[in-house]
Image 1: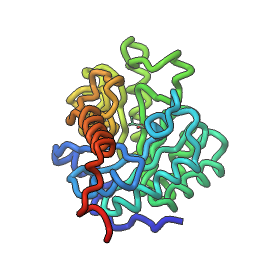
Image 2: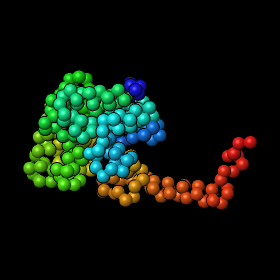
Image 3: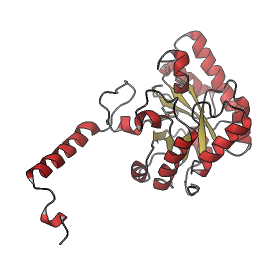
Image 4: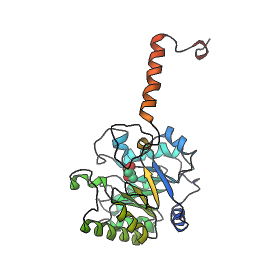
Length: 271
Ligand code: KIV
């Protein structure tokens, strides 16, 4: 079992404080120890071990195949690499829909792996889980808008909240999440005007991904931010690095050096 991450200078209450002080929050996803070590040297406010791990790290087409055990493994690795960061772990598909006791068990596993908070998609039908986790001292982050675990119901990864009915429903659920005690919520792929309306109406911060600049903070998948998959470029996922060509170039130079007999050099060999 991983060490509890207790050294984070940031906490769930700091999220609300940041909103009060109009300080924007930056979060990224991370799934592994190497990147977690790098992130520990940055100023990002939080790290999410997202269930997108199964897509980004394991090549699945959706997040539906994520399991508590898999998120636990990734959370342990990230916690070891970034013990100073506020670490949030995703509750995977159905892990909070099989009754209160099962949900609490799942959350407990993720906390023991090093998470300081859990993220849960949606709200209707699992209000009891959110409320009990919060009452138990476990910070809960919500996730509304495009909820990737509902991809089958949507019929694909689609922008949500474009119709008036859908927009009102997202607003209603956002208020409900706040009332249940969530400390923040991700708003994914909704119109910027709707995200702004929700942000203005809530005391707790909104963290946007594809939801415009009006949110209280932003989150990106680290691999998207680093431009590691040129085949995946939704317009919200700005690559802050041209990562794929740089990786390809490094590997090509290694390959050439090996084949030319110039690697390893004498100084790279043992006598
Ligand atoms: O799993 C994930 O990466 C997420 C982010 C998109 C917020 O939920």
